[in-house]
Length: 299
Image: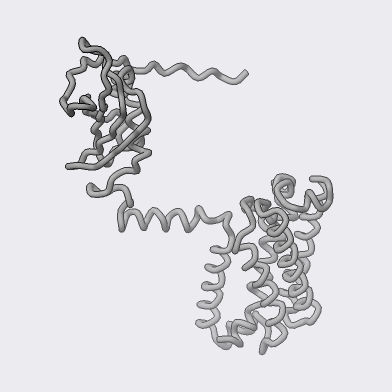
């Protein structure tokens, strides 16, 4: 298997370099990608950084062509190893001096430099060093071991897909959706409650909150879950016949309700005297629904 992997290494490395090089050389978003890299600071200009990326893309395509046409040539393999080592050095410098910068390695990635970028560069170095030790050329390998060659190429292609963050939506998103269908949402079960912050957000958007806002005088003081309800406690002041007295305002709403699944929740409101724990009958005014203002069109 090791010998077969060495034989197919030029094909796999050439395909990787061809994909990344074509994205840099012919991509339409190269200027925007270059603006997020450390090359702007090194070269002092965004246009120079974009030109540098295109030059690197041309070099990658040239090395890929050499690996595919002459997989055992010292020049092709050495160029691949040197190119990968240069990538590792650049990534290390960028990660150390500008951790939030992007690498500009591919046409679809714009996030900070991560493990994928370093892994791709390390694979290029490994392929350049392993190719000269191959028993034959990559196009002759399927003739002797067709099944093993096909399996290895498919596995390597899957690894390369994982190493390209720009295509996560093609495999990672469906995988996450399948996991949710099989195992369920972590907040979706009846015994699982929504986060407290989600309950507070839902409460503060409700009509019950608007009606009781004249009594409430504090932020959230306490909360607990009981019989499928989440109780939220706030401090308040009730202006009654006996004068102003401190009270606790208790809101009860569905334990699993959030803004996403219950936009208009049923909320129970109870006002309790802070000193005697007696329920205080407070007539709450009927809150009028909020009027949605029209969105102004841009000029």
